[in-house]
Image (tube, rainbow, N blue to C red; front, side, top):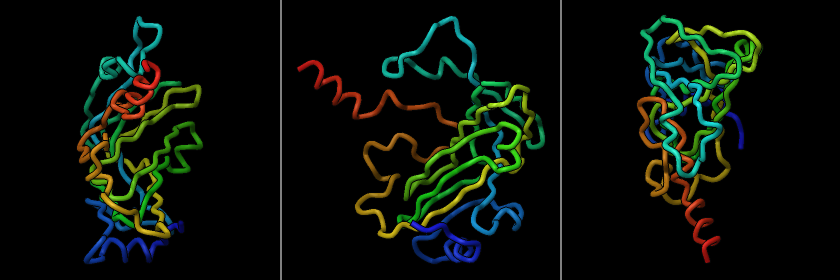
Length: 199
């Protein structure tokens, strides 16, 4: 794999076939030397305290541990220490079959304790759900619409074979338009494990 440069990113975004789609780009400076800055969207799923000691990732409805809140562009949201907030990218992203990507927090925000990291599969299409975690000791205030993430796009040595991520039968996160809670309880592997244990 190799990281796409600014020139390669522009070329991939203007290609007629197998192109990279990121829309809207509000400012040309979002495309950097080796990454694309993405903005945080307007919908957030905030983790909330519960009286429960723990949740089981297999059986539980994980939505019950999050509260959805909305912010207009420019409005603030506070992320408290050790709190997780699921946000989404303002931009719609579609990766071609010959690329994957890593989404991470911009360096300036990592330095104050805001952390995220996520892999984006070849062929993915939708907004990107981003788990934000405040690893500092003080609350961090962000604004909806600000550049929060960097998307680093990798060219695969070989184009991924078969179906794209969006066409795969067991894909759990397809065509997102808002932050999506974990769908770990839908993992096919868990069903196989359960069957193996019961035999």
